[in-house]
Image (spheres, protein in one colour):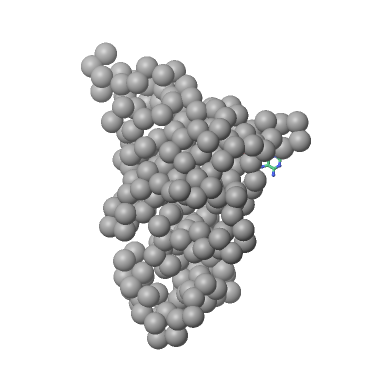
Length: 253
Ligand SMILES: Nc1ncnc2c1ncn2[C@@H]1O[C@H](COP(=O)(O)OP(=O)(O)OP(=O)(O)O)[C@@H](O)[C@H]1O
């Protein structure tokens, strides 16, 4: 589990996060949702230590992340997998080299051991055999799956996904969402996902926080979204008149 305690973050005069206290649970898909500029990426970067909070704490289990020395931070980082927006694969490396990269960085495994681990991750994302392709030779959905394979290659305890569906069509988005949910369950990972994809909220939102102007405006799970009368949530999820009508008809209004 990861917990944040009263996180504030400002850039110069601008206060982006204003007292975020929340929990991200193990074995669950934890979603950070909110409109563009709400502070989702800033919060995700704080969770992995890419940014320092102005004040407040981040706890990985019983460990206060911002009290650690470099060696201890590295030990936590080894337990973290990241799926970046736009997959962030290295264009000049093959699929296999991309997935192997964290193993090259963090382990002393032999080539044979690494190859076995890469192949098993490729199989897990249903991409066996594409080892020698370059990212430019495969589709955007396949690139995402390679990104997921790379994110899980070190058997992480924590998985962070920044807009995993950006740039994907609705059907491919569902495949990616289901893959992330399944892996979270199989490996009992604490998964944190930034998204403004309504479909993801309704399909895999097991623990959701809605950020609005740097604060948590709503928290709950997918089963509570439809019936909640929180206006900020409804404005965000059912943004268009069409979606509002769908909600009203689902509620029998
Ligand atoms: N390094 C920075 N310096 C100054 N301001 C920043 C920095 N990073 C983020 N911000 C500001 O913080 C606010 C929140 O940004 P953030 O990227 O977290 O939004 P977001 O909710 O992830 O939006 P999106 O869905 O568009 O990615 C924005 O107003 C942004 O301009």
